Amino acid sequence: MYAGGMTINDRVVPQYMFDREFDRLSRLQADSPANMKVPEKELREITERNVTGQFLFLLKAEEAVPELDEGVVEKAFKKVLKDFPKDSKPDEEKQALIRKDLEGQIRQEEFFKELFADISISEEEALAAYEENRETFILPEQIHCSHILCFTSREGDDANKALQTILEAQKELNGGKPFEQVAKKYSDEEIVDLETFPRGSLAEKFEKVAFSLEPGKISEIFQTELGYHIALVHKKIPSIPLEFEKIKADVMKGLENTERDRRVAELLEELKASAKIEA
Image (spheres, rainbow, N blue to C red):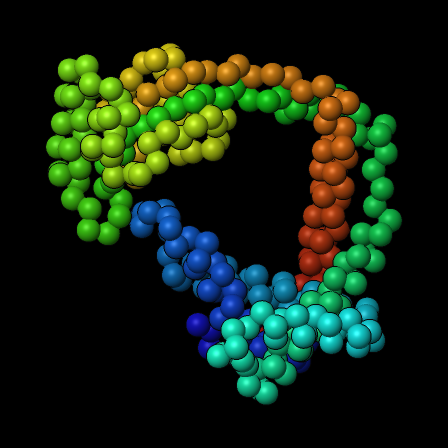
């Protein structure tokens, strides 16, 4: 996907790193509606930024961890080969690439383990963070909801047909037919019962309507990026403040992860600032 032979600190960035990252990002958005997917040009730019960071960390790890335990590398290598189907074992060139990649991963694991070794969050720090951010330590309001969805966002969807279908569904609901029965007949989405979920779990436009409904009420027809919906709220669960003792471990882990992220971001900026990058 990338052509041009990028070099960082006079080292050529392997083509497979770009291909692998682009494929990973592409898979992440594969099931997203067309109007929510990142354009290919932007996806390639994100790929280049990500790979630049990955390669800088790899170079730093090689510098910090010049020697590896060959036993550890060999064990990891054999495990990867074992996972390949018998009829598609990699050739020698591919095996060499796999081994080199594993060495890079192991070096980075050791490097970051050392980078994070002195991170320690006390109970007092966790309590202070809890007290300062009480509004964030709340189990949010939740609803149990079902829906009927007629897609308009997928390739080949007919928006007019979807509207007519959802209107037919509404007509039968207004006539007194059970919601589940109508949903099974008209919904394009196999999952009718969305079960219980908090705000922020689904599309904003959907949640705006669903959370405004009273239990047992059925919405009017409304539209989101996916298509036309009718929603039914079965019940609502009010928000609940969380006690510190019950979430202490999570607060401490969250602070630890925040410090890890800060150190990684700070290191990446330092590496970028001093690196010679040529595309």
